[in-house]
Image (cartoon, rainbow, N blue to C red):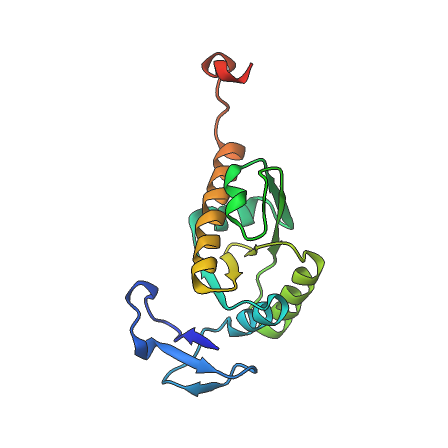
Length: 173
């Protein structure tokens, strides 16, 4: 598995910032230490057969993980169809929120449990930390990041913004 070296700016990666790991997470090629969250990536690869795992630290993923501990469902948005295997906006996407933990053995066991419990989810949030998502390819994982980040912002704005007065929405009759 390839993973970025810990502490590098993800927007300025070079070939030297990529490490190769074996299935236990030990570095087999490259210089430096892998991400502290390597065990979570390994768990996702093992449980989902992912070819790529991506992790973001966006405002909306962090905010919603704080506001909706335990998780929430996303449904009714056309953008859901951008997630692999989803064919309708009526799909109900579960977004689990896991308690963050600095003990990676314990946290990876929780990731395993959640992925087993929600076999159709395309991502999860770590409490006050960010989003994890994956795909069969890097391109698919990037698409999932874009779709899920859009959906998280849409859910956050819809849930936590002031309501629009009925007279301002004549199309809702």
